[in-house]
Length: 535
Image 1 (cartoon, rainbow, N blue to C red):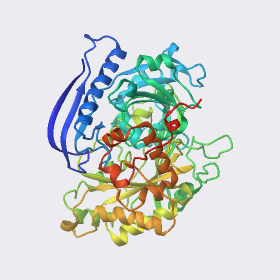
Image 2 (cartoon, helix red, strand yellow):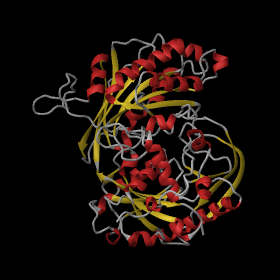
Image 3 (cartoon, one colour):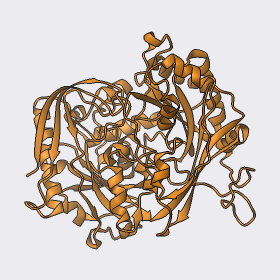
Image 4 (cartoon, rainbow, N blue to C red):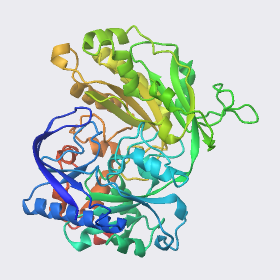
């Protein structure tokens, strides 16, 4: 039998020390050993029964219950004051069998894999790689668990691929303590697996596009995500370049995404007519305190997979432009204990030199994030056509109402079908601000909380539609924030949630983050068909 250890912890914190938050109990469930229970599916179902036992205990006490994985979200979205469950040991994974495919599935069976919630992206990479496949996209690094990635919409910043959740074709949710509370969700327009698979995991099937899209970026509020079915693709390589280009040219590309017509080209990355190829990934780094005529850009191009290529990891280990917080801490290492000196350095320093060219798999290019410590990250999503204007406004905010210890980047992501995906624009520019957490009074500068509020106010005042990354720092209790970002989609999300859950289980899977954003609202008497299969 799966076993759970219980710890009265008092407080809980994120990976980057954005808490601590008051917490009564932390649970950790370990799977039954393979020697005692050889069947993977039996161990999976055994774990589900244990989670249902914990859910029932929380319900009986009228307390909340919430799962988390790597704790990489930089706010309280993963936190629950009563009962938290650490998922990392729940990491079963399997390929999909021929008899589990839906007869109307348009997916290739060999591209589909089933992952338990605690699988870290890195181990998923390794598993599918052994099957000749690759995950389609990840975050900037690979230490998050799959359930956390999907729940908060972690984006890979791939122009034509989308975010992590956009590769998910099936969701296994545990929504309560009873047998019918194990649910397998798919889109009715894109069925993948059949009732044989559902019966093996003891789930009832709901095929409903609206419910699936709402639950996909569900913020932990649609129940305990026990497993996901993901679509992968054949192995491929990525060739990464880091270059300096003219500032105006970098911003023009951000606005148009028209690489074929741009004078920006990289030798070997052009078509037969010499026009620039469209990259897999495009990113711009900006120091807001220096009016540099050039920006550093990262352009990554997709290549066919070959067995022989130079090991990229030695170079990626030293690549300071690999992730924004890595770059910032590299700049800050001389003055990391003095925020005023660090800001003075930012105001006089250009970005470090570049000339990195490296080829590797997705897992090797978007690799481990080595920094662990107090850090913040703000990320607003805007339509890419508004990117230059929004960047100008928010860098002006940092200079005139700051300064703050941080630097900026822009990444670009394909739109998602998930109801509350922050990648909601046709091409979403993720405008990011990353840096080290500071003490406002001690350093005599604006607080992080005030800066987050002003970010919202500035974008609203200039009529720039925006979203905010669910896993990043923000003024999440800003009045009307979610409705302003999503309009009626927020109501739709709450209606589907209310149809799937009871009022008691909706409260069970709520937390202060949902309360702050007013997404905890339970809408009574929602039509039952919202949580039923569409025939």
